[in-house]
Length: 192
Image (cartoon, rainbow, N blue to C red; front, side, top):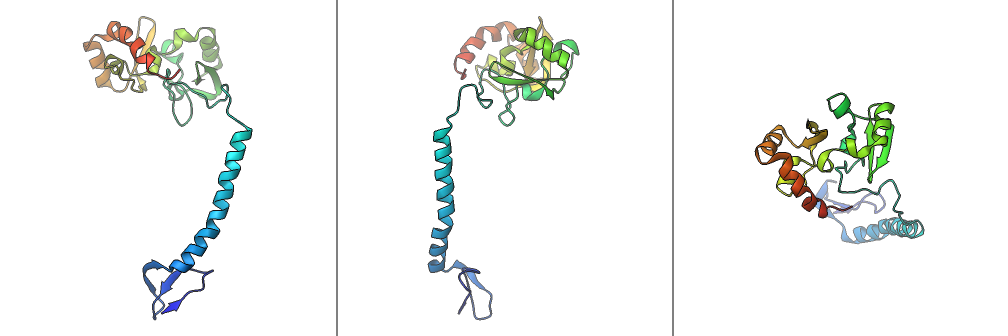
């Protein structure tokens, strides 16, 4: 059996020069593993040192809340939809990065400067009911992120749902009055 130079490869070859199974020569593998582990250990040590020298602060942009539905990848409330557009345009409109504002532990986006200014004047009036959680989920005491494109405007509030079926079930199962009573119970279990 022929062996390939340790620096080129650690695969054992048969007499014809083909790989002998998928086995790797254990002597060469262990030497290579030790060499490869050094940079990894150094990177972990550097990361630990960096974290120790620069601890996270409570006002960092990454700090968030569970009391409002926030996209886990972007940190945006309502997955980037404009909360004011529900009331003014009667539609779900995507917000723009140029018009953002941080409130209640989340970053909110708006379709226009005027919508952002309106929200800044009175955010509680435009924030979705139940923090943007599915209303039907609240009835079941289960916080389920809603789809911001499935909504109902009622009593100067916007209610969001995960599906049209959940919206229908919400109103058939006690609706707003029942969910308003259960929301404080659900809210208690969410991280502020």
